[in-house]
Image (tube, rainbow, N blue to C red):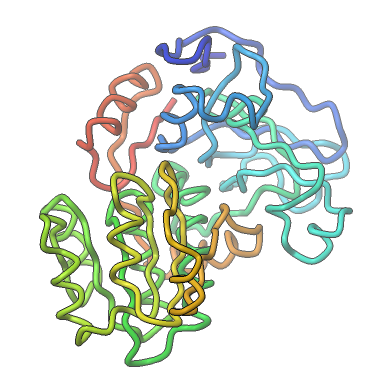
Length: 341
């Protein structure tokens, strides 16, 4: 089969012929890929940022946002059958460790992460497990929702966590209305009555945010921190969700946060630089968000089937993977890029 493989860091991946994955265990599921999301993490992988953490041996196939059709199953699989439309949770988990038993399977002690530390879905077929596949509603198609498997799941996880603390009348600042942010905005609108203020460098992204539910859109043009302060009566927002995490976003985001506020870190790339005395005196909370659980993905699929979360996508044939990566790196994509074999 055709697959896009990392052959070295700081160099372009290559389209290669590799063997199709086989069922070797009773809970294995082979998925014929209908869509694979192109994520900024893929750019970080190619830069070598994940090399030490993942320990993966090169070459290997990237792609961790996947959906398609069940192609083959192990003899113990009962939750899906050949031909079913599915979205794939990004982790393969054991189901037996403390994290899995408590429903926090994203922290599984024995997980594999296809596309990060084992073969992913920039390919025609992907091997995963019965614990990782969620059947899709008849109204949903794999290529339309593939990026919800990670970008959507991550955005949902952060937005749902933030929504537990947000009350009507509260303000929530969303930094970044791109691939993750535009999903997070929709999730927040579905789960909370808080007032949403969206900040982005790109005027087109701000317009998109306003069209999908943002109460206020602010272009990050140098005066955006002051604009957010004005919109919050000078106090700052109760919650900031940072889907960018680089290029000064954390510095600006912290300046938009009120006392005793929550700062949700989703995007990454730079350090948080705050004197500890400021953390204590303002009693602010920094909250990390890593992907999301299987249950989070199931809940997100309910919102997608209800048409309350729509994924804005641009499709590329699998062989045009480099164009998709280049467009993402250059900021030319609004929403998510999807590779279609």
